[in-house]
Image (tube, rainbow, N blue to C red; front, side):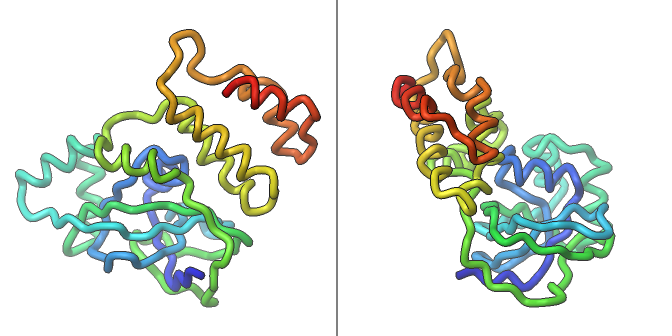
Length: 217
């Protein structure tokens, strides 16, 4: 069970990159390691939240040399970094891990960056990391390396594992393909890109799907 007690309000680009598994780092004030926060973009007056992050590590930004390294490392502009300095007296580069949870909650975040208390404390029993251990560790080691198409697809499907019993096995199959060496002819198996994946998301998977999945292994 996880008990996030705050909302962490992020710049929209940061929010999108985190929940789609594009990065595992975040500029923010120092937070205790292992602390969890429900995350939302700061441009929403009312928002349906179903992601939280856990602080994995903190690295303080101490001087101009570190500042330049952060700009290059995160591929952001001086203006973007200045926004953080305007809101936080001290900025850390935090390694974070993002999870999707169920049931989702409705929150009303203020527009300022940073955290605010949840109006009603929650206890999260159903949650999944959007990136598997292998992909998460790989991205932490090389944060500037973009995810391949298959790795980008998996975070979008993780919410299904909380509501559909078949989804976990399906995603495990995707993850197995992801960890294999890429094939030169097709970066993603054909059975993933055809209409079967849409039917699966709608809960109407066809009998031939499992056979296609087995053939692609």
